[in-house]
View 1 (cartoon, rainbow, N blue to C red):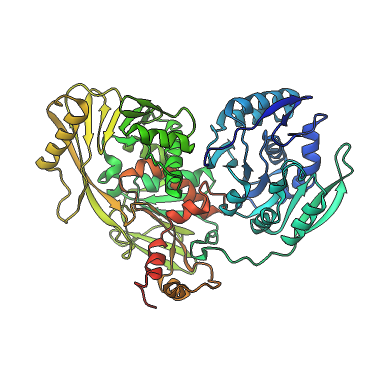
View 2 (spheres, rainbow, N blue to C red):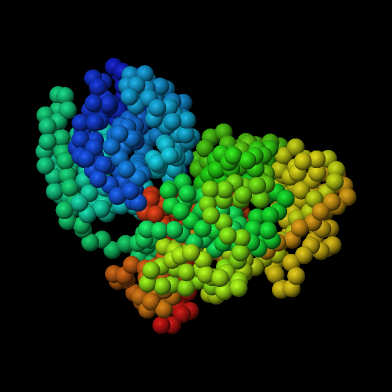
Length: 620
């Protein structure tokens, strides 16, 4: 069952008690002092945060998010002592609802004013819990990633390296699954060499699990009536072969500026995310900004609704929610949340609802259509301009990139070299991939039309779509292979859009006002391409055993240092770009990604080569 269990709670002497586990969330005597003693001091965070490199985040992992008290204490400690940025990753199998957490945080803020600012911020951004991983900001330099679901599954799907851990599940005697050997083993896998962990429990099973995971532990004075607690340090990094080393996260790129080739929605999204992580970038592009789909008069921010629980279903859900959040926060009003509806069988809607992947209340049944309240239309040009407002923009198309010992160089038309070298290159050039000749991209031609007449109140989709565009009707979009030649609207495509609009509206749209054609970048599996690029020859040699089904310890993926792709966005680029931009920026800068590893694999650039090797289509 995908749907998350709801915690059974009761008040208990100024704290919360879980009836499910018959245990309290924090000490009723002084929960904040307990947290600071066990987790902040137990991991020596005041000292270590002050010593952290400014160009790398300090990463804290946590088992048992609960009310978020530990996270709030960490934020306060970082604000007083830290440099650079703080990433927190926390897993919770029985998450509090928005209402329950808001009430708990209100009580925490009132009781401990020192952490009230972070309690208020957490209450403002905490999502309606749904299975999977989501990321929120608790300040300009603090990011919290919440993993909701089974602790074992969430850890297996995690891909980061923590400096410290808060092991704070309910007591091992009441919640043994949280302290199992394989769970603590995953904690070890996700810990940097020399990283630490702290916990209130000194149970023998916990000590043994830590030791098996490579940690050396010691007892320390406990808090209050507890005589002891545990402190641990990872001294022996256990050798664990990744299940899919060909999708392993690359080594973070060197310090320095990033060059982004392409100034459409993809390039703008990753530039924006890099800026938020304190990394400078220069964006190159003219045509991608003014000729591609990023310059359409409007685009839809509508979800893809899947009736099963797969990495793809979770990805498109998360992408929609992140797009709404990102575009709603822009300084310029680019997003219009008019709502949207899509045709569906009622049985399918019930199946989607019962699955529990989507937050409750986001969609409802309306006649023969599914209504999505947060959907809306986006002015792409306005959004791209706002996302690029804080970065350097060179409105010329790059014609050549060259790797040197010092990094990457970029040339534009006229053989102009631009200031470099750059620490990394992101190829975000859409349907035309001149700088990546082997890109598995097929251009697809799409056309939309604007008609005069009464616009619908909201978006309506059924294969095609209509949407309000001021006082006019936006209709589209055609989808056809690109056979070469000029990219221009045709009368036949306009008539196809008119027929689709008539069907959805129930009446004839008015006269044609404008038409626009553009190329989409599509991939063989229709999912985007985002991530590091292989050294192709080295990858074929490293993984040739896959063609014969050999099970062996394969080496980590051989990537071209500092070279990334962000393309293949197809017809959902406006929806997927913000989440994918955040993922790529995290990968470049060594931050925790919003994407778990199964979704990162879904969009990995090397997946087609690995697929062809497994099918025996490539010979070394």
